[in-house]
Image (cartoon, rainbow, N blue to C red; front, side, top):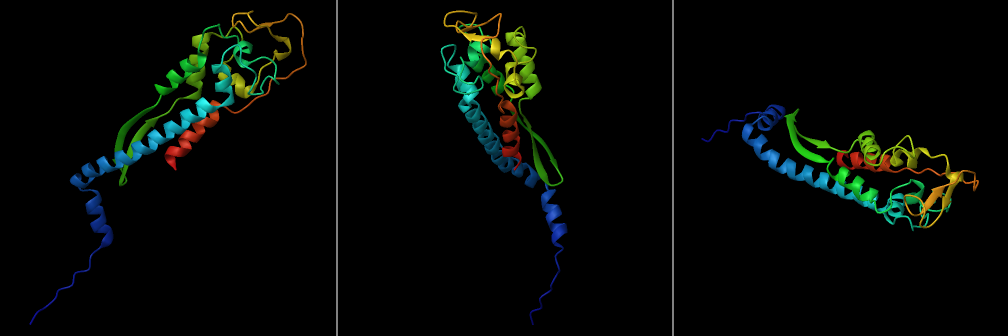
Length: 201
């Protein structure tokens, strides 16, 4: 006679034993890190695609001869000369280099049956401090990145003038030359918010 002994398995107890097994956790790190790093790299790729493709970035990158394709100056002059960058400077590449070095990916800890990773992204205030430190604040009390989102006064004193000024593309007049108003747009804030959303969803 063959007898069959039945033993009821407690699913949660078995699952907890598996999830707390050292070998399982170590092997899990390999798989989890591969998945997390892929999401991180994809998020970075999207971030820099948005940065490179933004109208403000593209206009400044083209220098003092650029048209106001972003529309922030209502079509008058360009952002490079309005912000007063020195001729020959490449503020976009400087900021991009800083941004690239502000990202990092590291293992965190295994808690509550989850593999956690420490992902560092650029801090907007630190980026703005870097910009002010790099280019000074003699033409604005804030960084040009903050100005893009908050707005600027003084556009009605700005005169596009090829070959003049430190940018070789414009000067500040001593009297009002137009009735234009600086337009604002979302810039770095949105890019950083999108990055956080992409890696946490």
